[in-house]
Length: 181
Image 1 (cartoon, one colour):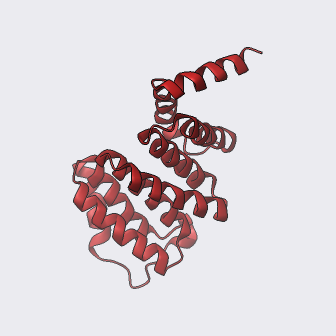
Image 2 (image 1 turned 135 degrees about the horizontal axis):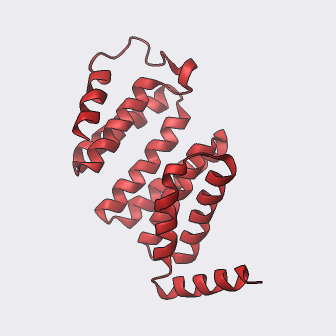
């Protein structure tokens, strides 16, 4: 991860005068995406305060440049960060925003990430039924549109984990009964 962080920081070291340079080739501003990605790397390395600063910066830049795809993805990552901190209110608050943005722009990739984040936030709050609904939606979109498949294993793990609560057992029993008909 350190090597990826080094490459990311090299890409951010000298920002282009036009932060949208390259967006016509890769559908998002590479610079703004790299700001978000550095936050993701820092989060994975346990540097949560540094990750928050990068997510803040990515949101600021994404809003200023109307980079809604990066905005949705960053809010999904904010939700994951809040999940790591055990902050269910922030996780849920951040999870709703990417769902709205991703649905509005119609990005299948961002929709998968958004519903994944929403499901994870609902799990943190102990809301198994709502979590399962969101996670199943993430899984269905990803499979149907062949996108964000790297998230599938975690979504499936969260779905399995949802059955560990009392409400989750009821959801699991209902899903089993529905699947056996």
